[in-house]
Image (tube, rainbow, N blue to C red):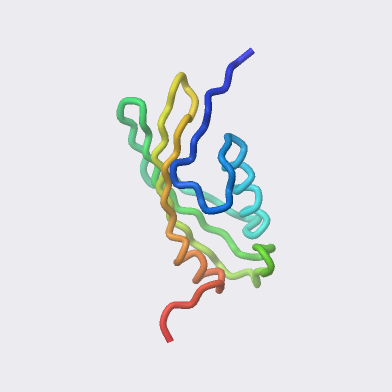
Length: 113
């Protein structure tokens, strides 16, 4: 039986509990909003026990996100993850996403007049 190590999200959004299933839960929820979500790994760098992954996600906001339903508008999200590995498993994650640009694409945020 394989023993799973503890997973810690070091940049956890407010209100989201820790645990290895949480990133998968967040991903499933986002795919509800953007069912045709695709990802391109722009760059992946490994050094020691760490891997940095820079990605671009694209798709169309045609599903539900919170209390909003998309109108099919295209979205683009850039994200970078810094993952720490131990015995072949991801144990730590630090991540940053351009959520403002995403929310502008989804028409959930407006910048300027």
